[in-house]
Structures are given as C-alpha cells and as structure tokens.
Length: 540
Image: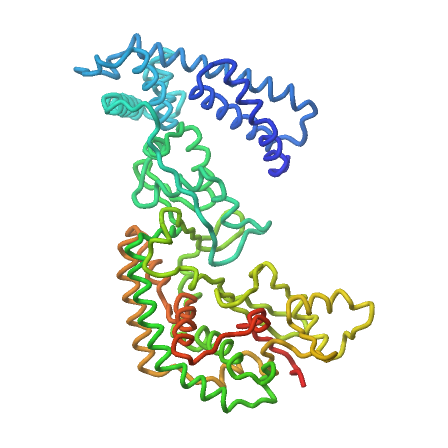
C-alpha cells in the first residue's frame, strides 16, 4: 500500500483506536501507550500489503491482538516486581512510594531498555530460560548474555532509585525546515522523507550534541524504546545517523540552532562587513553602470536606481566569491541507499523570541537566489527580500512566465485570443506594464550572457578579499560554540564566502537606503526588483 494511503487510514482511525484503548484501561496514560502500539502495528502492516478489504474488522482484530500482548507484558513486569525485587532494589530507600507507583515506574523503565536487554530480561526471568539457552537462541556467546543481564539489571537499579517523577519532563523540538546540498533520491526522496516526522526529528536532536544509546534516547523523549529502535533503524540505514561503538548513535546532519546571544553577535558582524562592501565595492558598481552599454542592458524607463538595485544584489552574489563553496561541501556528501548523494541540514528557531532582539529580523529575511535555465530565454535570476512585494516567493517564480516574456520580446506571441492567458499572467506579475495603450517591460533585461555581464562588472578589490576571509573566520568562531565538535569541519566550510550571503546583501541594501545611495522603489518596481532576464534580445 502506498504511504499516503496508509497515512490517510491512520488519520481516519486514530480516534477510534484511542477509544478502544481507553475502554480497556480507563487510564489516559496507559490508553495512549496502548493506542501508540496499535497504530504502530497497523501502520507497519498497511505498508506491507496491497489492499485490505474490510479495514474496520482488520483494525479491530489488530487492536485486540496488541492489547492482549500489552496485558501479558504487564503481567510479566508485575511478576518481575513481586518475585525478583533483587534486580531492582539494593538497600532501597523507596519505602515512601506505593507498590503501584513502583510497579508503574518499572513498567516504563523496562520499555526504555534497548531491544537486546529487553529480550534477555524477558527470556531469563519470565521464560525461565538458562543462560546457555539464551545464548543459543540469540546466537551469541554465554559471556555476552551474562554481560547483558548484568547491564540490564544495573540500568533498572539505577533508574528505579532515581527521583520518582509523576509526569514526563521531555521537551520536544520541531524543525522549522530541512534541506540538502546535493542530489535527491532516484524517486525524488529528499531529507524531508526521512526527517519529516516529529519523532525522527527528536531522535536526531537527542543524539546530536553527544552520542547516545537507544535507551538514553528513549529516556530523553519519554518514548518506549521499541519506537526509537524502528525509527533509528531507518535513519541509520539511509545515513542520517551513525552507529558507533558501545551501541551509541550520533547524528550527522547539521542542525542549526542559534541562541539569542549568537544571533546578536552575528547581526553586528554582518552589519560591520556589509559597510565594507558599501564603501569599497558599491561605488565601483555605480560607476560601471553609469558607463554601461544601454544597447546591451535594458532598464525600465532608463531608471539607473532600479538597475542598481538588481545589479548590486547580483554582483555581490557572484563577483565577491573567493572559493568554490559547492565543491568544498561535496567532501561531506553521503551516498545514500535511495540513490541520493548529499549533505543534510535542518534548522530550529522555536526558542527565539524575535521581538526581543535588538534588531528587526524581518528586514533580513530572504529566499536564496532563484535561477532558471532552459528554453529560449538563456537564463533568469531573482533574489527575494523584504523590499519586494512578491508575496508568493519562489513558488510563484515559474520558468514558463520567463519564457512567455521572451516570446513577447521576440514577437513569437501577440495579443490575440489564443495567448490571452499568457498575457494576463505577464500583466498580473507586472512583467509587462500598460501605459496609454503601450506596454513596457518592467524588468532588467540584458542580451549579454551571465558570464559576459559578470565580466563587465568590477572585480573584487584586494582589500575586500582580505576582509572577506576575516569575516569567515569571525563567524566560525561564533558558530563553533553553537555546534558539536563533530560538526566543526562542516561548520568551517558553511562559513565560507559569507560576504556573498543573503544576510550580508540584505544589510547592504539597508545601508544604501539609509545613506541615500539607493532610493525607495515604486509599488510596480517592487514586483520585479532584483530580477534579471538574460535574453538574445532586449526591449526597444
């Protein structure tokens, strides 16, 4: 069955499943635990069958089977408490706790144990198997069985003598976004395929700053170890988490989580270095555009200010590069089972109270540069920032619109009824503006190739090259305190050529507006600012 169909069935029956569990236990915590086990079994089986004809009866039967196992396991754990207290207590000071409280704690603690420990405990204490019988069944040495029993008993003793807690104290994170540098899987799988679920995200986060065992992760998240085992197996299989010696796991994706202090530090750094660009490089760009060949670079109404908005953002992205950052990041790429080759990253921002920062973050929010290649239009480029009014962002940047604008420029489409929808779209996006029954193109257009345009722009001054290296080093020193040690090499490359980043370029725009080098845009100009069409023709 397809994953989306299984997801739909689970969503449809989750309340029914909880109702079944609550009718058996009359206890919300236990009912939630039973319901989680039922959902897991149902979901796993749905993914392994083509079709289930009578879904109601299937879910009811599965629920009954899961509940029967749950009851049997509870009996085993109760038997453990009543008849094998030696593995739990040693000079116990838990007399103030009720027997029921201790039993419930034990019930939870065994579920936090890793699979091999749970199996060994169950076979030795409940199934009455001898050590050598367990060794034969698990195909491991007798000494390993004894070692596992010792560790399991030790873990239970330690955790059962910890301060008793009535409720789970776990704090969960939620990734604001995930991404990858590199290629996606052969069937379009990307990072979200494996890290889109909340449980997977929290497993990755739990084992990010230090390596942890499944038991430690389960305890962090207050989730039975069986659920951790199944999820972590997928993350390990596809290379998002590494299994180390001693049964510990360590996440190998870059999780970006900045503290307020780090954000304040980075803002000051970005602002300082943006000023260097404004002072050392922007004047060179202005001079180059004042002396431009108007036959090769078109700007609406010959408005130099509008042209500078786009050229400054474009040049600071592509002319201030010192390193091949993409190539440097490739050494961290992982070849995954689904055919993808990439390095994965995610970011978290939930703990930041943005309104309490000393600066206004929305001024510097942006989408990374959008590039379109193909068709008759050689290329187009766009940079979305706070200063434009393109509400939809990259989702609304369609290559077809660029092709249609190019077709208009070359006369391949005209305003006849067959092209009415194409023109409606061009007017809606303000690529074309109609004035007194005459249209003009509301976008910077050049008949130069992107490389030719870049060659007409001034090179990076030597002084700015040195400054760029200083910026990278300064940011790495800040980031070193925010990332675990095993991510420092990635972090170093991540902080390469920061002078070309959107964080710097948005602050360049801000400072150029403040010092009046750039003037405010009209509402129509805001629709297409920081957009350049590379074409074989330019508007008249």
